[in-house]
Length: 151
Image (cartoon, rainbow, N blue to C red; front, side, top):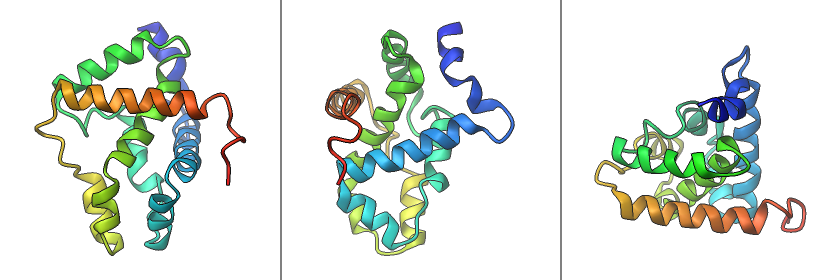
């Protein structure tokens, strides 16, 4: 438990600077991973803080069924860099997973409704395993080369 709290304690202090930094890092990462999705969000004036704040604050507990959260957190606990470092890549993979649905939305309201109510109620171990595999791929591609892939 102390390992978990060490990486996220500044998420829950005044002005929540940890969450603010993670949301900004997510925005930068997504702009590098999938520029089309990032531009689509910008086109309709969707700020990452408007949906990803909850992802960072609740660690995806409200986005995924409990059975998936347990599997996800089990993986987080095994991460050598800590819980919050890998969570960034999981959130990026989670957002890009919904690429098709995001790009089909044509206004701010539609995007916000989608991003705040993603259809994960029937997700299970297989979907979480795919999400984690993609998060690992992103981590290995982008974590050690933060400027190498910038456009």
